[in-house]
Image (cartoon, rainbow, N blue to C red; front, side, top):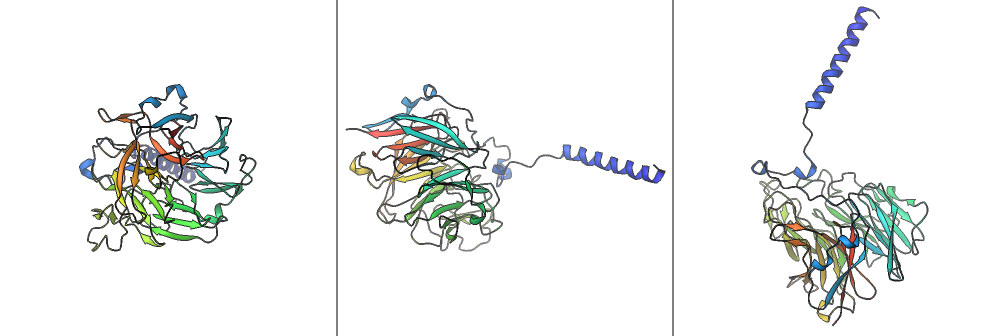
Amino acid sequence: MNKKAFALAAASTLALTIQAAYAQDKPKPPPAWHQGKPPALAESKLAPVPGKMTETSAAEIPIDKMKLPKGFTAEIWATGLVGARAMTLNEDQSKMWVGTRGIGRIYEVSNEGGKRTVKVLAEKLTQPTSVYANGALYVFAIDKVLRYDNAAKGAAGQPVDMTQAFELPPEQHHNWKYVRVGPDKKLYVPFGAPCNICEPPTKEYAQIRRYNLDGTGKEVIATGVRNTQGFDWHPKSGELWFTDHGRDWLGDNGPEDELNRLSKPGQNFGYPYCHANKVVDPDVAKGKKDACKDVTLPVTTMGPHTAVMGIHFYTGSMFPKEYQGVAFIARKGSWNRTKKLGYDVVTVKAGPDGKGAKITPFATGFMDPKDDSFWGRPAYLAQLNDGSLLVSDEQLGAIYRISYQK
């Protein structure tokens, strides 16, 4: 090697060494949940509550601590579903599929002879959920859509990859899916804001879409939706009602989470400029006049940072008559708050037009307000054919069955 080549090689090696050293010294970027944190809260120790990523046996679940109205009873229906979230059932309810978030799995639960067995149907997916429709199971991850045909008696075999048809945006933050098939036989799919609070980088975020089952016919039906984690259709009006998480880092008491009603396609629900009941955002709405103009306000607010998740309108005959048509809502529980709130299931009774909403505690006892300790985090609800109600617990990876007897 001549002197010139040697010098160039040495200089290149030195540059790479310096670059590597700089990369090691360079601080890592803050996690996504830090975004929007003001300087005044720089020393705050508030952080998302980590989930329990190992199985919990039935013997370890303190089901006796759950508190319910008189006449109601809770029992453990299934365990071994680490990170259990949304549930979907086939027609005779002999099969259930349960989505997750952090662990990346879809579970299949077989319900036969009064016993439940659990297996992992799919794994290594990015925050997947699923919905059963017309004999098929549709699995939605942030970056993938799979269809398992002939799933009525259990999903098996190689799924059909439908990803391209649904035009999924790539950002992960708040993009976990809750997916349902509506009364119109279309798939309803949310796409959350890719941040705590920001102007979304493109129009494909902070919205709810609907599609035909094959991915055609894409239609944006709601905008300004920060992070909906659940929706259902009102049994009388047929209108879509959905929960939505308020933004973080504006203090303990707001903005509150929301319960919203879509009375017509195309409505805007405020994000990122307007939250809850006309709370103007101090970060992104600066200088913006009429930030809450033409915004559809919620049916009711659901408490600050309570993490409202699944909603289910009760249509069974087991519960007393006063529960007919009432919305059951799971509140997984706060993290961006110095005193914890939520960790329960509440009911919301309102007219079909959303007026007169009243929130009442239903399933409590998951959290001890004396010391903020908790054992469970209710996430989603499903109704069995006998009229009992299932509640998934993401923290302990279990499903509870709530029944009523006079």
